[in-house]
Image (tube, rainbow, N blue to C red):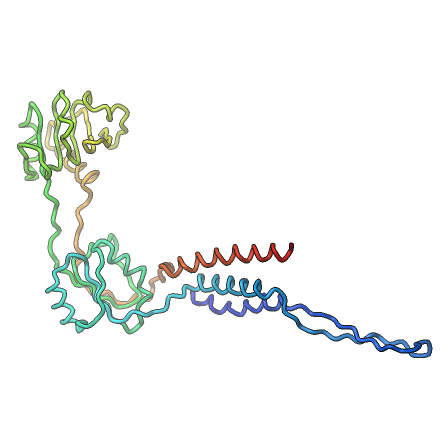
Length: 323
């Protein structure tokens, strides 16, 4: 529907009509006397003339730019393309591209997490007869995407890899904490290091100033002034500090398996985030019910900047003409 705006181009005739003025020229005949002549109306002729040509050009460009911005002037220009997710094995990519008959097609490299969204937004850049092949471990979207064209996705179908979680326990009751992490097979570091994901500080004294970790579990807040006015979420008080993110709960260490499970779930949900899953290989057929993506891109940004500049210039010229 955006392309229908091109039919508004005849509106450019309006400023041309406004800028042409009619000038009347009166023709009179010189006579010695007109006493005995019948009365006659003076003859008039009208001639077209141009006025404010520069202002006319600016207004025409302003209208043309506005129509182009509304019509989304992106024309399909891409041909056969292979989109490769970043980090995909090069030999496997060449094998799959050759198998699909796209060995000589254009290549695009894209982050795995952004591939589906980017392809959905830029889908209109490909010509109707172009073939698209997406290769690599593309992240699975929340909903099955729909496209207005045929797109093939091939992945390595590897299971999602969970990030390794390592814990250091500084406590006078380490056995209670070890039981919390033992069920999940989480490694326990005897000394904190660069790979330590979590530090359990179940002591009254303050930790060394140089000790850092992405997440801390604290049972005593006396040595952590950041938690004095910390907000709460799901029964946890939390605050960010130079040492890392601090968590505190009055119910720690967990007293039963349910409490331990809740602690681990909060760690995954509120801090580590959900694991990323790889989308399975599949063929997306063209969907007729799909709505066209919203126009976007660098060209529309340039047109918008040009539109603003022409509008400012038109206002300046109009004000100067009135003065």
